[in-house]
Length: 83
Image 1: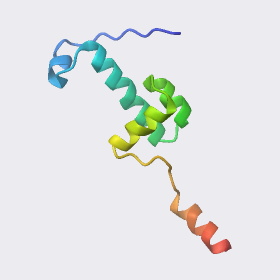
Image 2 (image 1 turned 90 degrees about the vertical axis):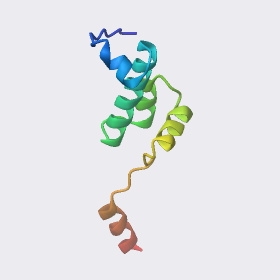
Image 3 (image 1 turned 120 degrees about the vertical axis):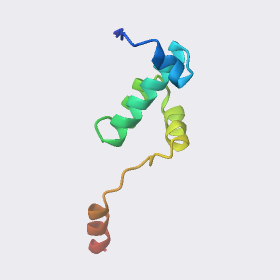
Image 4 (image 1 turned 45 degrees about the horizontal axis):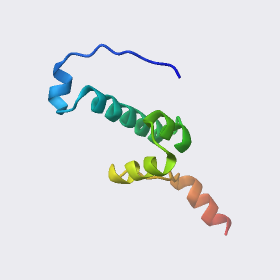
């Protein structure tokens, strides 16, 4: 596993009222959700980035009120028009 080190000002931890470990966990989840929403990573990869299994990642998406399945309305309309 690759390890990444970040130098962050001490104030970021007190601003969010998180320990450094909790901050990193939260940051990993935020990045995973962001990249998943943008369609850059799959659910499985996003779960790995977040350090979660897929079920727990889906639960995190629900807590954050993020759509689990992206629907392109134009694609949906084309499918409906095909009958």
